Image (cartoon, rainbow, N blue to C red; front, side, top):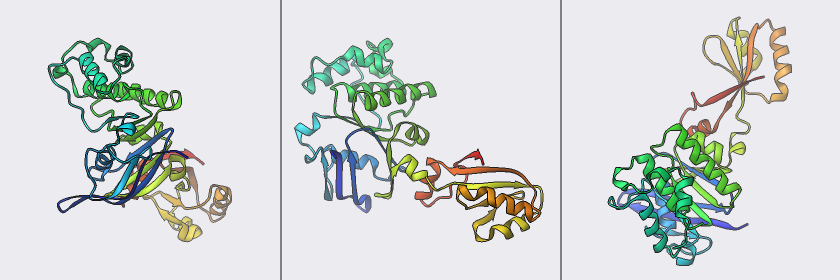
Length: 305
C-alpha cells in the first residue's frame, strides 16, 4: 500500500506549547482522509511540517516517502492551509497564472478551474474585493491547478454558504473517486467529513485519539431507547446494569440488536407499557466528542427498532 503522508514520533513545541506530541500516522494514497480535532489539536502544524514550511522539534514526516521540502514530492502536492491570501491588486485569473508559472505548469487549465470552483464571473476582478468564500474557492482552484496526486485542504469550506459547501463537496468527491486524487481534509464541518471521507483520524492535544473508517468508528455504539407510560422502576429492574433512565419517561438499553425482540417481550411480561422503541446511534459527532472526553448528548441519530 502506497503511503501519501506519514509521520513517526513527530513532536513540535512552541515554547511551552506542544502542538504535536510524539505524533504518528500513516495516511494511504487514494480516497479522502479526514483530520478532525478542535483548534490547537495540531492539524495545521502537521500539514506545515509535511510541506516543509515548519521544522519539527523531533521525529519525522514524509510525503510519498520523501523528506519535507523535497521538490520532486512537492510537485505532486497541492495545498490550501487555513485562509488563503493573494496580492490584492491581482485578478483571480492573474493569480492562477502566476501560480501556474511558479509551478512550471504554464499550460494549466486556468479557465477550466475557475469554472469548476464557480469563479468564472469574477475571473477578472481584483481579489481585494473577494469575500472569504470567494477566496476559499480561488484557493481550491490554486490547489488543484497543477493536477497534483495529493491535495491537502485545511478548512476548505470556511466562509461558504450551504450551496457552496455542497458544490465543493461534490468537487472533492469527483476528484477522489473519478480522477484518482488523494485528498487529506481537515474540517470542523463533521457532517461534511462524514459525507466525503473514507477514513478519519481524530486529534487531541497533538495526539491521535481515534482512527478508522466512519462506519467502523460508529459501529457498536447503538442503544435502544424505550419510551414508557408506566413507571421506570420495573423496566430498569429487568434491564439491570444494561439500562439507565433517559428522562422521566424513557430508558436506554445497552443490548445487541438481535436481543431487542426478547427484551421487549420480557418488559411486557413484567407489566411495562412501551409506547415507542427506537435505536439511538452515536454519529461521527458523537464519536468525536467521546474521543475528546466530552459527553455526546446532542450528537445522536435515531431510527425505529
